Length: 91
Length: 529
Image 1 (cartoon, rainbow over the protein chains, first blue to last red):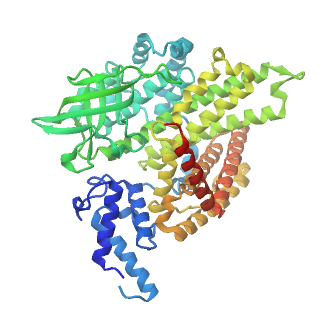
Image 2 (cartoon, rainbow over the protein chains, first blue to last red):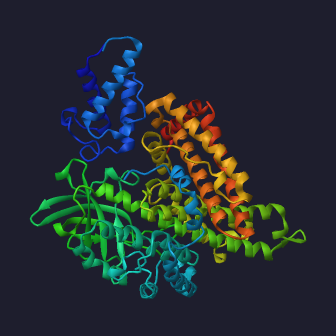
């Protein structure tokens, strides 16, 4: 079982891989579009890759509201918590 | 403002849209101005030697001067700045009329009145508008828009032309490709990176022709629209004063999307003109040509083709008018303009192709002018957003954010003669909404990778929206011919939507996509280097 911090690091690592930049260049308050050049489709593709890596079912709803790196990490964390609560596994 | 899903938007306003879709102009007052423009365009169009323009790949300067004299560069510029102030809907009709005669001038005028000038109209300061719009309206300056680069076509976030801050403004360096009107423009609106505002922040800037450091490349040798100007631009530390930035620095990407929505709609007007010319040419030919002792026009299959062509044009007009009505009603048109662009560009090609087929071998020869229709319209499936990209993106938007509610049923809101087809429409919308919800639940965000499904979803929506527009237009118009065309158009489009639903409801798409991936990988590996 991986920790929330590790999930965050893996989310950012996926972003870095997609954007072809160093993960250390990505900060939580950076905007996906204006700062990282990721448009709405790019954000969805990012979430799709993360869902495969972390074996999470991520819903389409509210995905378009993600604006920053922190938003994306919070979105992943929320789904992780919900999925594991359904499975009766502690977070 | 976020855009409501087009079907839901139109269904909620069906009662007021009947009249809007039955007219070419946005208002009674505009119809008089538009009437004057259309008469002038007809005279002007007939004066052009379209064959010579295509052969020499050049619009004569006298033609540009005449177009300016007639006000064709003033169509969408506000009246207080010397323009005609036509709505998007009215301007589309004017571009349609031009395109029936010659597409080089239609593209020139369309680009100028859309992407070229609307950046100033929407986002410019009053000082910028006063400085440039009168000259643009008179045609003293022709406008151009430069976004595409060698490494950034559909993906405009990948542009590398950069504006670095300097005293009083910026120094801009980079390269732009496929710049329409670029060879004779007096003012360029450029999309550039402004990295001091964010790693991927972009801005729109105006650059005057002749600016030191700005070099214009040679005209491209094109398959079609050969009279229009298409060049590359090379910028080497071109100084742009801060006062030449349009709107807020850093919002260029958002502004470009808004401008592209206008540009795609105007381009769709041009596609309608091409398709009209094709229908007219086909009808004239089949009326005159005899084979097997009969005129072609008496052959049932030929009649079917001709009716399908005319119905397609009817639906194209209806969908563009729907987009114009949405724009006038201050609704967002990002999705609708993309729908119109895909539908009309494919429609123009299909109708032109069928026109050539009906002409037989004669259609293959340049002197009939039919081949030129096909050559001229081919680019429309590519520029202003390649169709496959638009389909995948609009589907992703529809799935992830825009409300996909179908709204009120259509059948009670159309003429009685069209109610049966409208009921079939209502059933298909319900079926599409249900299957969309199932796919979202089944796949979640992974759906975004299933591009064949996304394309089918978008195509189904495009066909249904065009069917809706046709039925509303047919309800607003009087006369049996209109009702007949509306019914024929809608029936064909519902069949198209049903075919896309078949793809969406089937389970073999995953296997198909995997098989396609294997075949494509092999081909690319073996392709000549």
